[in-house]
Image (cartoon, rainbow, N blue to C red; front, side, top):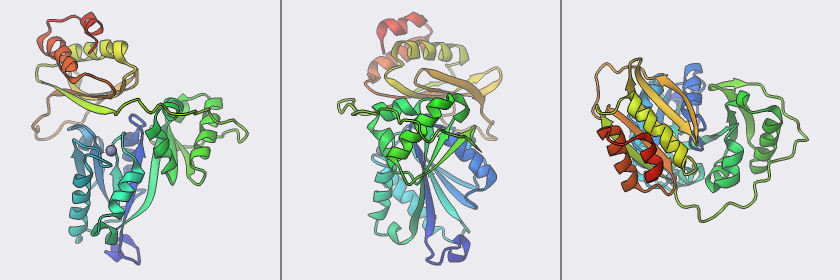
Length: 329
Ligand SMILES: [Zn+2]
């Protein structure tokens, strides 16, 4: 293994890619895999909720595992440790790096601690870098209101501000000053569509005033809603628009896949900002659970009312769009 990794100590390097929900981790990582920044890589993608399309989005990795249904820093920790042990045990495969794309609600420091406390992994794996992505537009608000967003930035060796071109220059300078305050030693870079870009910032800009974070904001939870083959582009996108209109403040992130005449589309939103849909590559063999679905991540969402609204509007087509605002899922 030492020759394969180029490390004298024979440890396998691990890179953690973190960042808040919607920061653009998959887009960025996809480009890094394309440029082979990490060499021969085994990618682990962790999602707090099951998202059966993550592997399609990162098609360039030679080896990829999706760890779905639990965040690797807390509820999915045992799954992560088991997956890392499996990779170490399959030592015959030449590997330069393991890259872990964390869920958007993960604290990278908690993951690092869990690996160091594992008696097997601590002798096989070395955490070489924690790269944290921050959204140029949403980042300042997240850092101001989310304790987790700050903890992520503080844990970084390298911070990449994504969607750089979308933020006005004065805000970019202020965000850079804010991030330098949170992580003074971290390298700060910028990216657009995952590609590194050069951004000049004003070194005298003032940081954003972050203030104290509200402690009683409650946990962020993921809810998955399945439509199987009963969904369809029109019903699902109309439901989603109405929901974001009515409850956008409590919904941090939406991801989903839905069939359309153009092919299977990936739907994504961050807060109320819906991103242009992306056409998903077709699988050679259709897999189980590949129907239309949506994963909603947010706070204070009542799962029963959410499901009722989905059943009625997306599955039953009985309700009307305004029914969502009225029922307030
Ligand atoms: Zn977690």
